Image 1 (cartoon, rainbow, N blue to C red):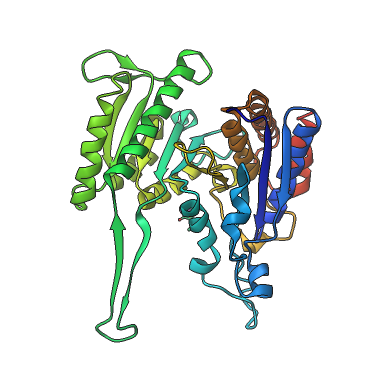
Image 2: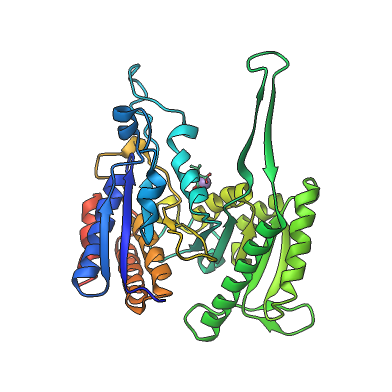
Length: 385
Ligand code: IPM
Ligand code: MN
């Protein structure tokens, strides 16, 4: 059944999170006011370091039940180490303060992380080669298993013979669903290219002819053989069902090199949890930097599980609270949320396009030079009217 009314849990978090979220919420409210969609936003002051300071934990024990009834979660950023020179600062290890990110991803089985990389006009171009303007990549990060399963431990802590284990787990089911999703996205992009909605690109098919999209599998199968082979075999089997999509494989180290020397050659890229994490920081820089890089965590096989939309960037404590943070990544992330809603609700799809166009227009006019957060927000909102 299609939804046409949406309940969103807003989690501003720490650092610049609340500032960029404030502008984003106001933009979403503006879109709703104009009748572009039926939206109900509820803001929570957890998870956050501030909540930990007060309650001794980052969020209430029943966080999962509290969030489960929402259609989607919009999250700003997590982590607040406090002033570096303050010996009494309230400090939590990153692995603690950021843990809700991983728990939400796991808790709602958000097994896909999508991070598109497109260089919008006005965004900084870090590569000198003019072809770098043509980057149009979607990195799909496996988000449920792999290097992030959190299994392992430390044996004999502190002893000279101490042993740390960090287990990686890869499953056929996990490989199958993420790879299939990558091909589905590629097919969608091929359609958008044929319809003129996306800059056309062609990729050679092995049997001759041209595809309008490609999927590149990333592994490190020359050293990490077992999961590399499992993923490669699965990739080959799934690819056979998509003869209209070109395929490719890169080892992760070579992929890092080629992301820099020829990023325009990539289309859809599918990678493991950790390798995808690393590659998406690089892809973010290729598309203008962390300040404009959106991201989402979704469960494509079960839309009743709330997805989480959070920008790739962190909480930037060094500039937090000073009205200096660029809200563009958060706004573009909200546009991704509207796209996701748009798969059921045409008004949300239109609102997503409007929001993205407004951010793009502001960027084209002003670039990413430092302007007050609220000024950028107001300028984007003015373009929504
Ligand atoms: C990201 C972040 C997180 C990750 C950290 C903060 C746990 O780097 O969303 O890319 O590694 O997934
Ligand atoms: Mn990361």
